[in-house]
Image (cartoon, rainbow, N blue to C red; front, side, top):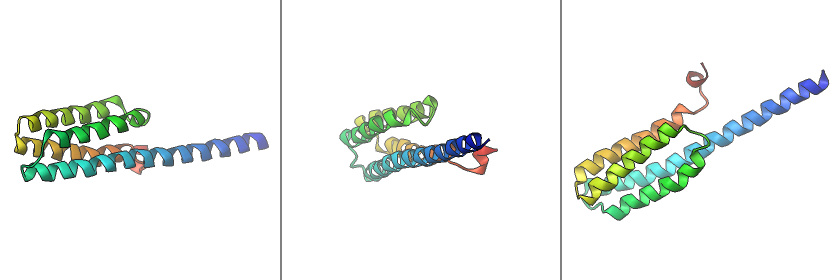
Length: 125
């Protein structure tokens, strides 16, 4: 009986620690991406955005997604990749208003995706 109780307590502690680590990892990755996207969006509004700026955003995403594959579903990752790829193309074609709109979607995804996997009553129930 004592061994079972200790085992349950240890597993519970490990699950809590794992959840906290996951929450911080996902949030940090998306916060970093969101900051870069906001800088790009401001440049797009000012019409000074160049393809290299968006490629930096894409590069940051590619580095972060390797860690995120463990925590979030492939569909979420794919959606962000598609929006970034579209933004790269519209920026290369110097369509700054279109780039700003796509960056707005990327920023919104950076804010919403971590909430989907956060520890909350909505996600538990």
